[in-house]
Image (cartoon, rainbow, N blue to C red):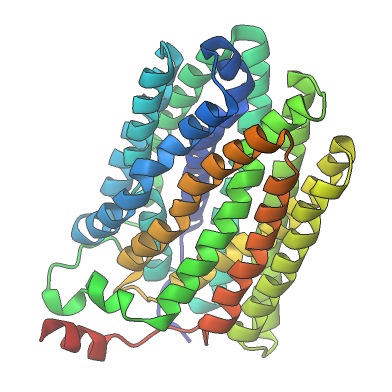
Length: 412
C-alpha cells in the first residue's frame, strides 16, 4: 500500500481543466480551418503545414519541459506555460496571414511544452497506486471535454463574431485559469525540485530502457491516428460531408463528448478490476488491445463508406480513443516513477508529437494527390495496431522501474 496521501480533488480538477484548455487552444485552428483557409487562400497542403507548425516547436521542446518541471517548482512552471500559450492564442485573432499565424502557433507550442511533463510528474509524485487509473482518467478526459466545449462555443463565436473573436476569447479564458490554480495547488501537493544529482534520472538512462521505446512507439502511433481524426475532422465534415459550419460544430462536439465520457469511465473500470485482484499489466494491456482493434475498424472503415455514414464511424472511433488515453496517462505515470516522471514524459512526448508533424502533412498531400480522404483513413486506422505492439509486446510489465543501476552506469 502506498504511503502517499493522495491527490487533492481541487488539484485533479485544475489539472483536468488545464488539459482541456491545452487541447481547446491547440485545436482551435482546426475548428476555424475552413474559414481561415478561405480567407487566406490556402491549399490543403498549405493548411496541413499550418496545422503541423505547432508540433515543430512542441515536439523538441518536450525535453526542455521535462527538465524544467524537475528543476523548478512544477506548479510555477506550469503556470508560466499557461500564460505564454494563452497570450499566443489571443494574438491569433490579430493574425494578418499565413506567416503571422505560423509564428503564433510556434509560440503557442513553446508555452504548452511543459503541460504533459508537468501533469505526469504531479500525478507520479502525489497519486496513490490504487487511485492512479481514476485520477489519470479524470485528468485526461480534458482532452475530450476541452475540444467539445471549444468546438461548440468556437463554432457559435465564429458564426456570430467571426473566427478572430473566437481566438481572442479563448486566449483570455485560458489566462484566467491561473488564479484558481494558485488557490487549489499552493501548499497542497509535493512540488519540490530535485537538486541532488543522486535523485535525478538522466535522459540517457531513460533512453536505455526497453519500456521507454515501447511507450514511445505506442504514443506515436496513437497520436498519428488521433491527430488525423481530430485535426482534419472539421474540414472533412464540411467539405466531404456537406454539412454547414454550425452542423459541423455540433457533430465534432458530440464526437469529442463520446471520447471524454469513455476516457473518464475507463480508469474507474480499470481500478475496479485491479482492486479485484487482476494484475495492472493484464488490465491495461487488454484495454490497449481492444482500443487498437476498434481504431482499425472504425477509422479505416471510413474509406469504404459514404461521408455521412463515416461520421458515425468516427463517433465510434471516439470510444476507442477514449479507452487508449487513460491507459497512456496511467502507464506513463507508473513506469518511470517520481524520480524520472517528468523527463520520461517529455522524452516520450517527443516521439509522440512527431506524429503531430507528420500526420497533418501526409494527410494534406494524400488528399491533394488522390482527391479523397480514403488513403488517409486507411493509414490512420492501421496506426492503431502498430501502437498496440509497442504497449502490449515491447512493454513487459506495468510497474515502477528500478533506476539505481541505470544511474550508476550513466555516471561512469
